Length: 213
Image (tube, rainbow, N blue to C red; front, side):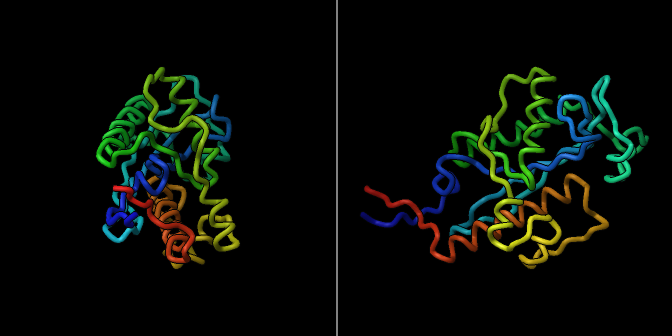
């Protein structure tokens, strides 16, 4: 058997495409509280098998009709849901457009499905699932229950579970003034995920699949 010279992201994650998602919300209850921002960061693998951040797609989101908005959550994120310059779109449009990008990337990278990567991934996944059901979107590209959680991974790799502190340990610049923006946090989370995966590979923790041909 010869070691394959190809470095394909589909081979690294058993056919799954990792997509980093960050969501800013009006509270903690995915069923009742509004999504205010959503971002998805695509990662790709280079010719040396290193995982790299490719591009982040993000949307400001209008609260859905009847959505709950907790003032404490708004104070924390600094988001004014009704600011006239937000240029927000309905959550159905935001999800539809982001899902188009993800499905295209799945096809281009020969993957079978996306898997959500997030810092405390269950939170973002819960809001995505609730919004998909609310908007009656038929094709959700994400695996229904499998996620990669960078809070857990960075706890293992660096002994830190807070995003800013984990990035600091990884040597990734983190600006607290920019934090709690979905686009910024998704991009930093993607850098952290790539760093951990690449360190694991360099330590001998993973090797490419062997080619029987």
